[in-house]
Image (tube, rainbow over all chains, first blue to last red; front, side):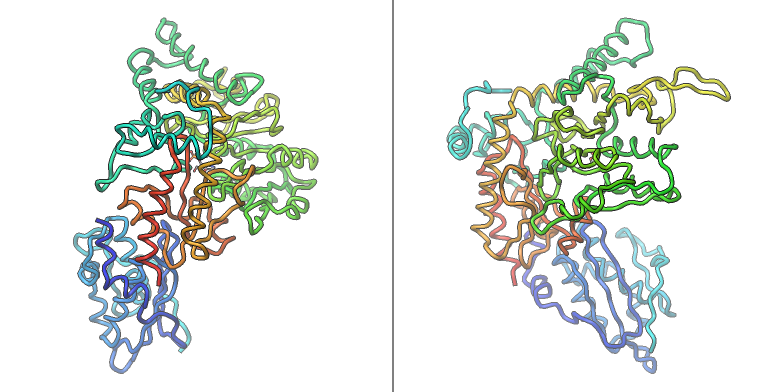
Amino acid sequence: MAWDMYQERILDHYKRPRNFGHLDHPSLSGSESNPLCGDHITVELLLDPEKGTIQDVRFNGDGCAISVASASMLTSKIKGQRLADVAQTRRQDLEKMLSIPLSPVRIKCALTSLRALAEALSTTKSPMVVSESGGADTEPAGDATASRSPP
Amino acid sequence: MARAATTVRSTGRSSAARARTVAGPDHGVAPGLHGCRTDFPILSRTFHGKPLIYLDSAATSQKPRQVIDAEADFYLRLNANVHRGVYALSEEATEAYEAARARVAQFIHAKDPDEIVFVRGTTEAINLVAGGMARGQLSKGDRVVSTEMEHHSNIVPWHLLTQLPGIKLDFVGITDDGRLRQDDLERLVVRGTKLFTFTHVSNVLGTVNPVRELAQRAHDAGALALVDAAQSAPHLPLDVQEMGADFVAFSGHKVLGPTGIGVLWGRKELLNRLPPYMGGGEMIRDVGKDDITYKDPPLRFEAGTPNIAGAVVLSRALDYLSRVGWDDLRSWEFELLRDAHRKLTDAFGDDITIYGPPPGKDREAVLSFSLKGAHPHDVATLLDAEGVAVRAGHHCAQLIMKRYGVPAMTRASYYLYNSTSDTDRLVEALRKVHALLSR
Ligand SMILES: Cc1ncc(COP(=O)(O)O)c(C=O)c1O
C-alpha cells in the first residue's frame, strides 16, 4: 500500500534532509539521474587520505521523497566510515535502511543515491557494485567515471 | 452509445450535477457525458479497493465496448490480407480497409481518401515525412522550425535531420502563460524555412494553437506546415481544408481507437513528390535488380502488411465519437476544465502552480501542475492509492520542463467519460498528499 511508503521516518529525512548541499573542496563526486522522473542526485565526498575514511559528505539535486530520504540516510551512514567498508554497501543494505515496501519502479528512486555514490567511488581502489536486480551483486557499477576535483 | 445522445442536451454544471444523481451501479462514480461511462468496461475496475478515476486520457484514451467488439468482429468475420487475394474474403477485408480510409478522410474533411496514409501513430507519421524529406528534398542551408511546446516525437525526427550537412533546426519559444512567442514566430518562420512543424494542442499545457494562422505564416515564408494533431483529434473537429496545413498527423489510441494505428494526412501533390521512407511489399509497382518503381500514395507509404484490423476498428471509434457530437463534447470538456481549474486553485491557492493558458477557447482539459513541497512522483503514487490515475514525469516534453524550470509535472487530463465529480476525488486525494508532504 502506497501510503505505507511514506512513514514518519522517511518523511523526516525528506523534509529535513541530512548532509544536503555542497562541499567546498570535494575529493570525489558522482551523479546519477533517473530519466523516468527527471530526478538527479549528486554525492560529494571529502576523503581523509591518512585514515582512508570519508571525512565529510554532501548530496544535492532534485528528487522525490524516496530518493531524497534514501540519499539522506545513506550519506548519514557512510560519514566517518572507511572507504573500503563503504564500497561493500549493497542495494539490500539500502532497502533494509529504508525498510518500506517498494515497487520495482520506486526501487529505482531509492537506488539513485547509491548509484551516484558508486560513480564517485568508481575510480578509487574501492569501487562499488550496484546490481540491477535484487539478486547477487555481479554487475559492475557501470563505466561512468567519477569527476575528480583538484585538491 | 448506451443511451440516446439527445437526452442530456444541457451542458456544464447542471448536466454534471444531473449525471451525479443518476449514477447507476458503477460504484457511485458519475456517468460522464450522455452517461457514456458505462460504455467503457475498464472504468468499472477498482484499484486498491477504490473505483478507478482515470485522468490520463492525454496518454491514451479508454475504449468503448463498441470498439472492443469491433476488434473481435474483424477477426471473427473479416480477417484476410489486403490487396492480394482474389478470393471473396480477401476482397471483403480489402473493402473494409479501404472503407476505413474513406471514413478517416471524411472525419478530417480530406478531399480524397488517397491523402490518408495509415501508420502506427503520430510518431511514425512524423518520421515518415522527416524520413522522406531526408531523401533528397533538403539542401544545405535549409531550416526546419519546431517549437518548445512539442512532444519529443515532433522534435527528435527533425533533430535527426540535422545530421545532414547544413540543415538547421530552430525552436519557437513559449510565453509564461503557455503560448507560442509571437516575436520568435516573426523571427524564425522566415525565408529559408523548409518546414514549420507544430502541435495543434499541447499535451502538457493544454494550449490550442491557432493552426490556420500558423500554417498561413509558414506558407508566407515559403515553408510547408506540419500539424501534430495527436491531442486535438480526440477533442476538436478537424477540418484539414480549413486548417490550411500540408501534413496532419494523429494517433488512433487517443481517439477511442486501438493502439498501433494512426493517420498521416498529406496534400496529394506533396505526397506524390515524397519518396518512401520504408521499403517492402505492397508499396511497389515493379521490382527489378537495378530499378524499382513505387506505387502512388497512399500505398507507397504502407510497406508490408498494414494494421488492417486497427484501421477498420479506428473507423468504428470515429463513428462512436461522431455520434457523441462535437458541440456536446466541447462544452462538456470546457466545463470539466473550468471546474477543475477553479477547484484546484481554491483548494491549494499559492501552493499550486497550474501551467498553460487560463481556461478559455484556446485551452483544452489537460491540467499539468506542481504542488509545493510534493514531487510529482510522490503525488502520482499516493493518488494511485486513492484510485486516481494521473501521470507524473516530463510527459515526453522536456523542453517544456526546462522552460518552466521543473524536472517533472503532475498531469490530470480529461475526456468524455469524466465528470466534474472526478475532480472532487482528485482534490480530496491531493489534500491528503499535500498534508503529508508539505514541509
Ligand atoms: C502532442 C503529442 N504528439 C505526439 C504524440 C505521440 O503519439 P504516439 O505515441 O501515439 O505516436 C503524443 C502522445 O503522447 C502527443 O501527446
